[in-house]
Image 1 (cartoon, helix red, strand yellow):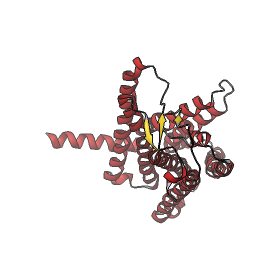
Image 2 (image 1 turned 135 degrees about the horizontal axis):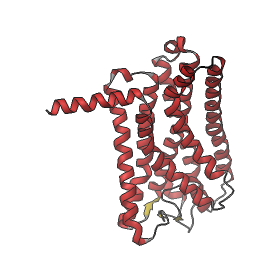
Image 3 (image 1 turned 90 degrees about the vertical axis):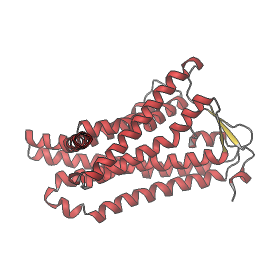
Image 4 (image 1 turned 180 degrees about the horizontal axis):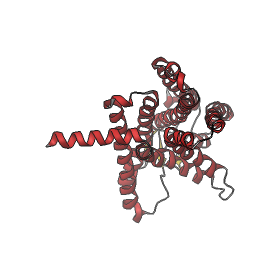
Length: 313
């Protein structure tokens, strides 16, 4: 069924961030710098993992896909936001809006599932070190990533198909910097009860279960360390899991700080802040977290940098 036949609205207007006109230039430069840092930093991680044979392990295999997902998540929303800030043309076509929402949901869900897969990888590495290579085989790693892609694409496609059945009558103003599913449902003049039910079910399945799996994985890791308490054991956990713990804390900490805080009643402001964290801040910080807290990544970066210097000389 054609999307345009479901709605009398041919385009939406993205109001963007609540920034004063005289501050547009400053924020444009800020977000452009953050976006370029995100792209360059994550692509550098992918390059290092591909070039350095010592990084051809399951942990870095998953990390390369996390970096790719972060770049993609930022690229879905930030370039359009920057273009709107620069040109003051806030319109986005109906098809473009639905497509943007579709890809945003894919990569946001993929981020969540990859963090869960990486937690399982760290659990096996710490709790079953002797069987790590036999458990985390190349086939299993590929299957875990493929399963994450399938679940992400499937859930996003389900939301998109259900949204495409709704009608949008007159109100086409989106008080956000991208096409957000909850806001689109509020703008619809159709019955959205089925959409809301599916959102609740999918959010429970792909939100609570992955978080529970991460908590269980790290609970088992700490229990394993506490059985034989030693400074060396604690250092091993911090060195192998520190970066992942930082990223997980940043990802889920944003949710807890924003959505469980009683200090603010502005739900749209909360969602916009959370979206900025997921699409701009977290993807930009991840390369720094994994580079500064990871000895192998710092070593690979140093080797690549020295090789470039020697080659240029």
